[in-house]
Amino acid sequence: MGERVGLEVSLAVSEAVKLSRAEVIAAYPITPQTHIVEELSQMVADGELDAEYIMVESEHSAMSACCGASAVGARTFTATASQGLALMHEVLFIASGLRLPVVMAVANRALSAPLSIWGDQSDVMSERDSGWIQLFAETGQEALDLTIQAFKIAEDKRVLLPAEVNIDGFTLSHVVEPIEMPGQEEVDSFLPPYEPQVILDPDSPVTMGPVGFPELYTEIKKQQNEALLGSYEVILEIWDEFERKFGRRYRPIEHYKTEDAEILINMAGAMSGTARMAVDMMREKGKKVGLVRTRLWRPYPFDEIRSAVKGAKAVAVVDRALSFGGQGGPMCSELRSALYPLAEKPVVTSYIAGLGGRDITIENFQTIVDDTEDVLTGGPREEYKMIGVRSKIDRDPGRPFPTPAPPAAGVLCRGQSGLPRMWSRPGHAPGAEGRRPRHHRLQRHRLHGDNQQPLPRDGLAYPVDTRRLRERGCSRSGRRVRHQGLEEERTLPRQAHQRRRRGR
Amino acid sequence: MAEDKPNWEDYPMAATIHRPGSATDQNTGDWKSMRPERDRSKCDKCGICWIFCPDAALYMTEEGYYEVDLYHCKGCGICAHECRKGAIRMVEEGE
Image (cartoon, chains in turn purple, orange):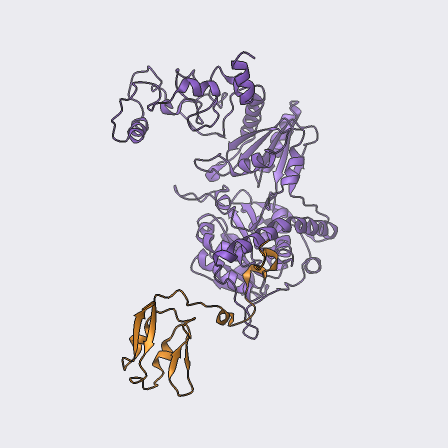
């Protein structure tokens, strides 16, 4: 076994790249990834690592250089974060589409604007569908191990896809942790030199990335997706081998106190450490809480996550990214889709927390679990909630989510505040003095175009038979909504509800 | 599945083309709207058109003139533009 050292996690990733004998590194420094590539450039300059270090002028070029290097058969590494990853976006798809096993570390950081150098996972979530294998580390040891494994996974002949190791910016990348450093011989025996299948070679020319005419493109995308889905089994196999060699076990989903748990927290990344502490504290108070941590994000471990949450009453998903205008958290929508086909499934609640470097505290996790308990006992349920967001309608720290005021007749109720969206600020409730928010008037204008139709003075600004919709438990757009006084009906299937309405 | 077309399993990984120059098998220029017409009486066999053709669609005949492979010519008109003798004229396809 290797020696145990105290090391900054960024430097541990660099060590992993060195141990993996990367041959080409092309990178551009960006906070909070800088230490990784700074250390690697030092290693190359000092002759510790026999690699070509390409200093590029942008991340777009970094990934392009990696693609070129990988295409000639080199073991290739880069690292980036946030805006850098976003700038790579275009080339990420080329790496996966050309089946180039580039390995990348991403020190996850928020995306601008407003400019934030601090951590969250919006950067990787924006690249979710880029066709890369995506892994999330919680600890420094994991960051090091996953980086070594990533090369082996990516370069496997059955896979040949790029792989990305996510480490949370600052909360993981910049902390010093005890790390068991494997020996070079051990790593060499685990990770043999890369044997490319096809390379760019003047003596035997090939064309990589030709024009994919409509009659070809679909088949190639199918091929690529099959490779990514098929990598799942290879990853498990490689993790088994890693366990045999290094004694550390890796699975797509990490379980913590889940056996008898009624409420599970599902999340990814370094802040799962805090979640563990919160789980321990809640367990002491007698709450049956557990943690399922997502380590493998792409390919998504559908079966593992289904069996991991089986038997639980609820799963609270904590996302460090926000899908604007959508379902809230990307990890939550994924879990919801995974569970949808199941006849018996836990309630899934979605929470957005830890954006732009804000901590997710133990209290936050307690709030999340309390709220999920509340949902289980018939409390208000929303698409998603943002944790710790300061809001005028909620100034009571002991009551993190406001109980919505009874909506006026004819007003559909949705949106995160629980108040009707149109009167989402105090003082703008129906009947209250004062002007309605500006966006209300805009909406009225837009919906009525030339303003030919007379507008109702109150209620919705557009003609909808709200009474009928309300009875059906639907919003205007057909989405089910929560409505005060209709909580019970809401939970019934529509037909049962209609039968009941007809008095049967 | 489709009778004569390959399935996704049949293609090389990432559609990589392993045989150089395979574009000669395809009619890569059959969609052009203009084609070059050559007047041999003006041509002095200088070969400028052959040098400039971006698609290598020109070939030399035994007499030393340059002719166009119309299946590969895209009709870009560069040869007509570069010809010093004005021996090449672009005409509409279908004329």
